Image 1 (cartoon, rainbow, N blue to C red):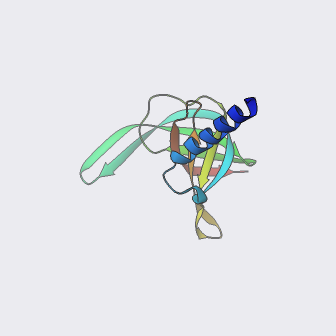
Image 2: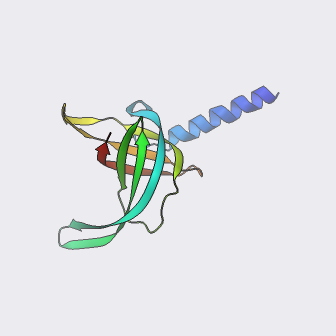
Image 3: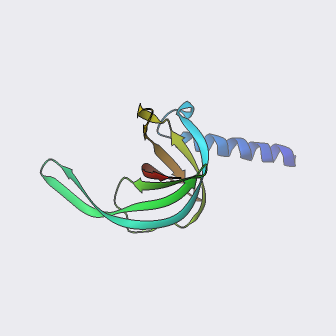
Length: 123
């Protein structure tokens, strides 16, 4: 009986995780993100004649041994806590063998997700 309950819980959580993505399951590779630091950076976005300025969240993280800088698209006043998070990386779109454009969907402990763009990379 305990095994059946554990199996149902496992399958339902996997189904719920799959339902929260913007794109199909096949477009994502599951990863672990180690957030080392979080900060707010001043950013302005312009659309036509309208300019909106505020703080965007920028985090320094380690993914597969590479140090990355991730920036959230949108304005926020709170900082993400350092620690380990589950995430999914969108397909890498390459402009050549030397460039890439990546988006990461980070899952928070409460099940909510946030989208980050990789804006920096170092070894």
